[in-house]
Length: 172
Image (cartoon, rainbow, N blue to C red; front, side, top):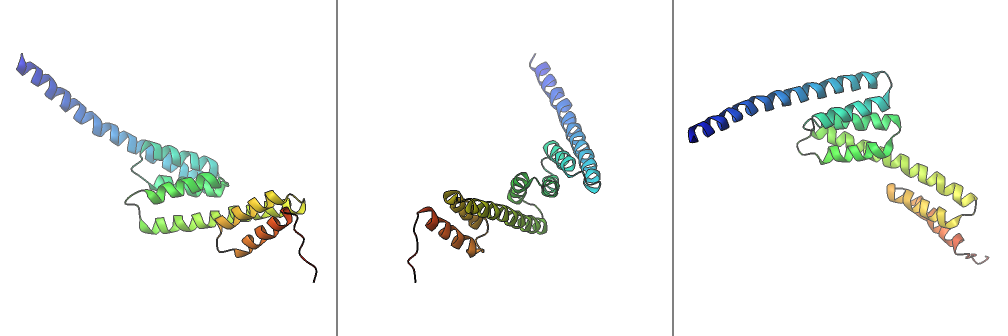
């Protein structure tokens, strides 16, 4: 009776042992097919579709972080900046990824932060023109947070804060 149990357990392990690699190979093939379709969509200018396909490839084979990088590139090109930032950060945090690609991803993150900062600064200017000073202050501060090298944004936030307080500078 005990020998029969051992035989069953051994056969089960053999079957599962052969099935797992086959499943893993199938997953890698499926991910590669998604990635090929994503590359074709990217080349064809269908960035949103390319991003979806790269993400599907990554979900199918998460060990291949280049799919995540491809998704972020496609999202950035499609104007999906928040998703692109999220996926660039996730890619950068992945252990063992290519250092050159990490450096490029960091550069793209800086580029996206600059774009978002410009958008916030434009919104702040619109708020200021309408006299919505508290909203202008908040938007200028957010723009400055995204681009700390643009000190002028902090100056504009201070001017807007002064206007919001109703303070009138003394005459000269």
